[in-house]
Length: 115
Length: 113
Image 1: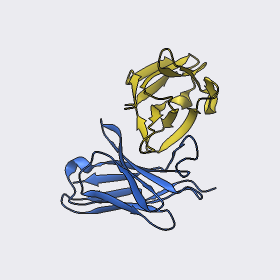
Image 2: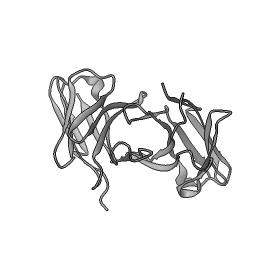
Image 3: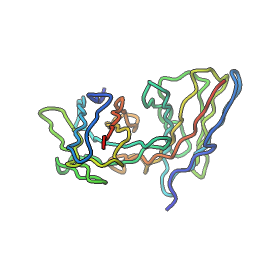
């Protein structure tokens, strides 16, 4: 069974540009989560999507946005990049809400570097 | 609001020694608790989870954790450390509203030969 896949593995952008990160969940998982892991800041929750809808959002500015497609894959967009957006962005997927303990399965992450 | 606190950002043990990584949680409702491990330049891998069944939970790679409600703790242990256990470990609690996990700050485990 394929795990959670993320692309690209690495991405280098300059300040003010836009970045798009992509995630494919495990087959059968309808929920996708995005986390930011910046140096010294731990794992910060960004977004949760389920069945194509944004269900919850962390404490991030509106320039962080995303969407979930009918095949449950997802993309995260970061507009007007700032230096502090440099981080490892982790995507995770899980079974639908109400399936019991929501065990999140993580991808390997996309490392975004903003110069 | 649910939260977790990991005591000790860095823990160093000798190969073959006991591993003890501490996690305390705060939750107004019975929590679901998790331990994840992250190896360098990789994503997070689930070690084990507590979902209100047995209080002693066994996970992969010889790790286990015990849920102690009276102490609001969920410490991770392994009887004998191996060099391959060197990684960062995260404790997490499932937040009932929003279906997300809230993570602790992480503990970096170093294993000395």
